[in-house]
Amino acid sequence: MTRFVVVTFGCQMNEHDSERMAEVLRDAGYERTDRPSAADIVIVNTCSVRDKAEQKLLSELGRLSKLKRTRPDLALVVAGCVAQQHGKRLLARVPALDLVVGPDHIAELPELLRQIELGGPPQAHTGFDLDEPRFLSARPGRAGAAPSAYVTVMKGCNERCSFCIVPHTRGPERYRPSREIVDEVARLVSAGTREITLLGQTVNSYVDPGAGQLGAASAEPASGWRHHPPSQARRDQSQFAELLRLIAREVPGLWRLRYASPHPRYLTAPLIVAHAELPVLARHVHLPVQSGSDRVLRRMIRRHSVAEYLERTDALRAAVADLSLSTDIIVGFPGETRADFQKTLRLVERVGFTGLFGFKYSPRPCTPALRLGDDVAEEEKSARLAELFGLVESLRQKHLGQCVGTTQLVLVEGRGRNGRYTGRTERNEIVHFDADEPLAGQIVPVTIVRAFKNSLDAELPGSPRRGQSTPRHALPVLPC
Ligand code: SF4
Image 1 (cartoon, protein in one colour):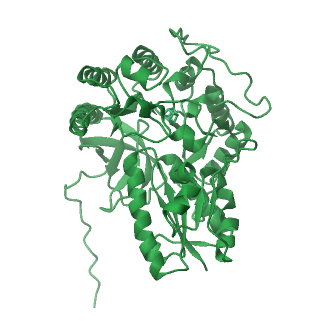
Image 2 (cartoon, helix red, strand yellow; image 1 turned 90 degrees about the vertical axis):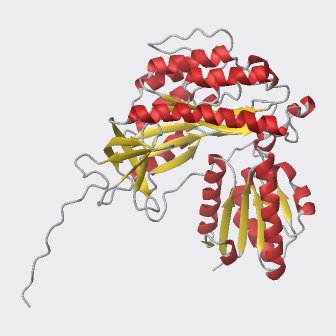
Image 3 (cartoon, helix red, strand yellow; image 1 turned 135 degrees about the vertical axis):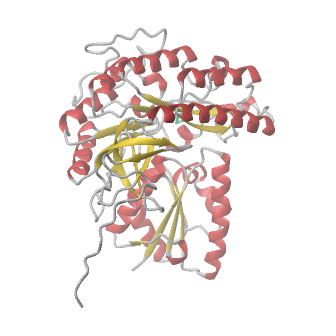
């Protein structure tokens, strides 16, 4: 049987796409392996959001090209954002490549591979499915459903953040009909999945392309909290809140619902009310802010201000007790002064983020920020990033310390290498604990006993403390 391996770089969307590739190939009779050395087909699913990820890909391709010299039958495929960005040019740059496929061509992989196997020439397929967008469904695996699963609700991005290559590599926004989304969630939940993360580049800008399933988009809630934004929110209408309500209503067996990645512009009043009213929504939101300086936000073309970000996150926190927030921040964006960076630190402290993905700005092709140059020295970018991480670490430590002594419901993901169970709380804290019984995929209450640097140590109620001697039962003495 022909074996394939998928090597994944980048974000959750890429991980999700890699799983869909594996599904379409398994359906076509291919067998998955984890080791490139054991594979007949190597698919590298790529990320081009940062220069570093692209460099890593090129060195991986160099290594695979060498392997192909010793195994000429090996098929090499590049998928994902770098495939989309470079298309045919990648075939010219890496002659060992057989296939370049953009994210909208996953379903065609088996047919394209068959043509390669029959001796066809290298090919590049990178058009966007603008007329008839396709969304491949996640399927429960052979061993049943994983405790957590991703479901795509939209793809592409209509924003034009000046540093970001995604609108170029993923195309304009295309939305999936709400009926399809609800059906996929229901299928996964009935197979045993407990937690769903809805995925999209700006997931909360969702609008239902189906026939009136969700009703008209609205920027005002039907009841409860009223939002009077200073500028943008009335125009930033979406039906994301309605989609969340539909899922909660039609899939009552779903235990926890998350989404990634939202844009602050679409943290609308109805979405905040949905958080207040739907217990299924996790009490954690990852809301990228990128900078705490209005001047830098304008240069980034983020289309929201610091005050608007704070107003919306404050409202979300007022609506949901103990909600935790995490974010993305870029340091060293062109023109970012020390004073701008200080504003970012102040924002991070003011919001009290418990998690943060921080990056040094790197110029990306096809982005408007290229025109702004790259004027913050590399050492200064590194120093700012270290300072930012230091601040977030102290905020996280404070937050984790406050969890000690509380009881949390944890969705158990499985055992780690040290044999301890790992799971996540509603607020996305990582928890480790010991238990003898099989608990993977279960929801269990645990008592938090200690804060580690990035996670929590916990005990099942009634279980002995770690290191405490457990009572041993004497072995029966059997007569010889
Ligand atoms: S919202 Fe901005 S940062 Fe996010 S994918 Fe779109 S352009 Fe990129």
